[in-house]
Image (cartoon, rainbow, N blue to C red; front, side):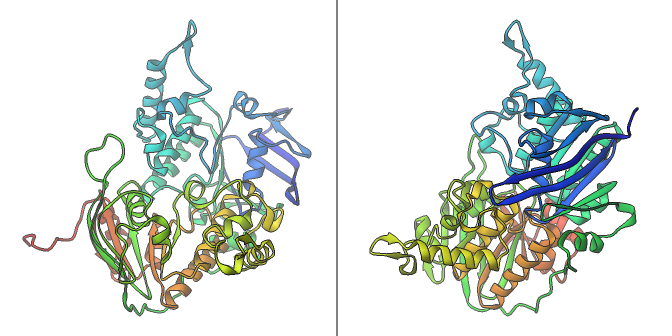
Length: 513
């Protein structure tokens, strides 16, 4: 007998040390539908999808495809069944080119020789058809996070998968790229592909999903039709309490200049001749949140790397009245907290425990060591305080290995560590990327609290809602230059979008009117 469900996951239970990640969960995906999976960080969404993709084996439960029970022992089994997955943390090889990453494991060969021309033609057709342009010859390590996301999606399309799993696909995309992806997903569904879509962004789910399944703390809460619900009801299902979806803050009271950047220039990596950041100057004062907004790939990442010392830069940087233009990363860190864009590369040592990560920059302080030896008890107490305060969920508490935690909880750990360091300047790059609405509400409140306590906050965000609601001033970066300074109370999302796209820019001093 034929069923309308292309995939059924029945009574799935998956256990890790100290935590039941999936507790008797049933999920049914219909053919040609976009089905959203919603839940807090650590609710078990990625785990459930990893079971479907063969990365984990469940302790209990069965999986059916088109009504027939199937065994998915590994991702190769999943691929053979037409199941593809775009992971939240990309599975790409940095030193390979984009093309090599896309075809890896699914190479076209003839008489034992790799047929790259044919592969290139197929990838170019796919990228043209779905509006996902990428430089096929660029190395993955040289492209932006947003571009890496496209590579992952093209990888899945290249394999002609009919069941597509998207794990937080929009976390690193710009508003324009998100619109394109939503349209692409609808196109996939029209073509008969079935999509499982993990997201924290309620607006996106309401726009694109046909149905939503909600998980909370590893348990199934319910499945609803999106046409019969709204954002507030979904957030209540997800968190189990009413959530404040808007940022409430008093007007800023800017004080002394904390950060002063003059003539800041950062060279581009790779074969690009233009500088990634060109002659940028601005100030951030105590008691204000200044946001650098822009479409991904317009120099924000390079600017932050130059500012924090991760990359070389030319120009003058004054922090708390002290010239730090030639200071080391450690020297800059004495006055600056940094929530990095890439939590795996620059935020955490993934094979260290949570408590070790929480004292990474502080273990030499007197409170954490005696006579050159780390005081493990003090570290444990400190970690447990932050874990509770920031609701960082992990299977084994302070001794959980960072790699095993969900992406959202890794992000909460970084934010807890950096905010608690209590520095005059907080550099927050995509601080709520991959966080659920409850965590976003908390982090926004923390940043406003830091601002009101007299800290200078430099925010870099691709989320237009976040830019508009959290900022006191907005600096728009386009092709490595600051092209606009806007007051969020006096501008619109549309005007901001024009500056971000380079269609509008403010006049520089000395330019004719």
